[in-house]
Length: 191
Image (cartoon, rainbow, N blue to C red; front, side):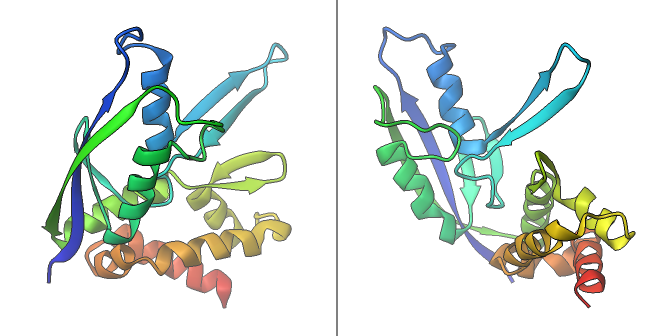
């Protein structure tokens, strides 16, 4: 049974006064997909910060540089970003001097394909644990092994529950050993 999705091909139009390699262009992609920043202190400590983008909490596929395939429920978030520039990565007070043009087409995907998209999304999920962010899968495994920090357990389980309720997860799980094992791990902790 095929899974419904939207194929979106987009193009950012930036004023000629800004080059395509300018930071503005990079910020637009960061706003869409999110990014991880590594900070190295003189003391030798390093920190990793993850900044969410519009599609950070959504499974998606990137068939090429300026195109994305998203679940039907993610379309409005994407269109809103193209129109307003609102995003979680940058606190823009106004959209800026750029425009986005996009073309949309309905697409049918196989369950195996959406399972891979969900696997990729889960690998990029982070949770706040104290003063730092850690990978969701790693923290879930720590809790299952008895190493997890209890105050954050409910937050981690709630984040997993949101992922597990997504249509693409539900349709893709039977076709993915990773997703099935992750759900079993979650169920063992929740019990």
